Length: 206
Image (tube, rainbow, N blue to C red; front, side, top):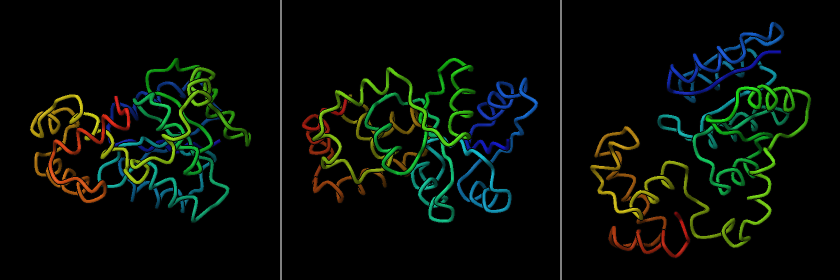
């Protein structure tokens, strides 16, 4: 079985390799960005692709869609630090067959890969329960057109962070955050950062 791990943090990739190294039937490939990941997928067509949500430049959701456009049978697992059920719902809506957090037990990570490789879906019971009780209105709300980075910036604004502080938290430049805020205003019809905070509060973005 060939598994492609896509993450822009070499430490995460090394950790994934270490988790999978005891299994001789699993061969690990890796990519640090979406473009490299797509090229590697097209060239090798691995059995499973494990994709981080927050990739530089292009979200993991966008990469998932691109891979599925090339190969509708692609088997993708979204691998993220975010345990918000909205992210899991969007992963599924974008065609992912699995969703698992980076803080989970390694045994669950391996179970997710084997399940998806076998053509099944994988969602942890606790996440499935959160999805079951997710307000249906949140799936189609005004935030549905935002990518994961934009959602994270909006969440941090709601929590009182300045743009400079947000840049430090998500490890990007101040200019990137300022540009993202401008895009958020346009997408959400907001005039000021305060309007963005209000929208985040109205949508219960914690």
